[in-house]
Length: 127
Image 1: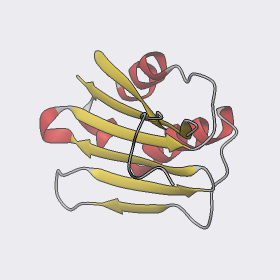
Image 2: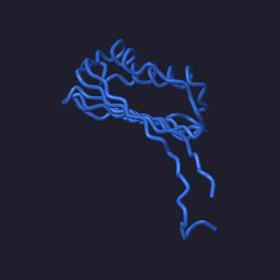
Image 3: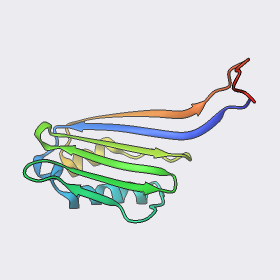
Image 4: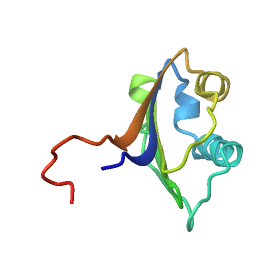
């Protein structure tokens, strides 16, 4: 059985962000558009955006031919979370620098998860 490589998923959390940036669909749209451009991703259809009422946050989702890119903001926690799943290799994106510059983030955590299935000797599901 050969290894199955189904891409890479990035999970990003950033806190210390400004309330204004976390409530601005324009700011977040510019950020996601930059990610798409710099990583040569391909958006399928129109991105979806929802701004919650009052002082709540914003959610955005881009369906990609490579998979998806999402953002969720929590102004009450000064927090933004992003998820990028790409089925093909991509260069690194400067998450810390960009989230600091665009959203005022003071701390950024980026986790990269390989979506791969390694072969297991004697696996009964190996057909």
